[in-house]
Length: 282
Image (cartoon, rainbow, N blue to C red):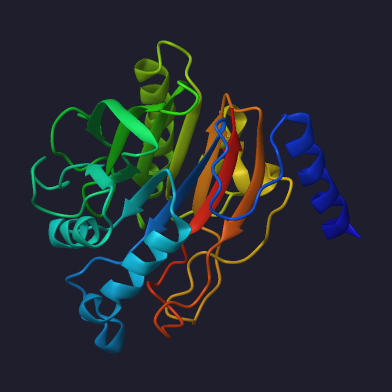
């Protein structure tokens, strides 16, 4: 009954938005599709799950899901360059967390240049000194956030997209990192644009830092007319935790949230996390 009601709600949202019902591949001028995906860093020795074996499947997922904008985590430069080569039309912004250039993991923002145009972008570190490469509080490693302001080409509307990866150990780093995200979003977003915040937060939505974010931004999984409750981090099929999230504000609705657990190239898992997606309406 709940799923039926959510489906009906989704149809109502589409109709109220004045958007025609359409099949796959038809783009609506006042909607954007956003995603978040931890690709598992490419230097890890994961045996048959190492990057060299699953790289084509990750590229195929990106081409199949065809997001307007996607935030990725645990990305090494060679992984980002590979995806760009395999996915014509996509570009990215982002730097390595170790030196602010190419060293270390990135949290890049990939975007489809046919759908959106980049207006400005930047990076800050989740630390006491956010404007330079640094490790914050009790964090196990340096953590960063990448942000970008885009203009949606069909509608002419602008929005702010922020992508991050909170620390996996430091409780203070998690709490203060989440607070810094909200502080920096407010500083960057002087024009009051719609906001999307994606990332691997290493926290479930009922933990305090996530509750704090949820006070200012909407959780796409919770708010979507059609949604699911699948785990996003599975550790190659061994676990099931929802620690990857998409938050938003300034959009009229979220029509669809989905955990993208489809197989690609006969690989059950293209990473140790599933990608997640949300369809937002301006």
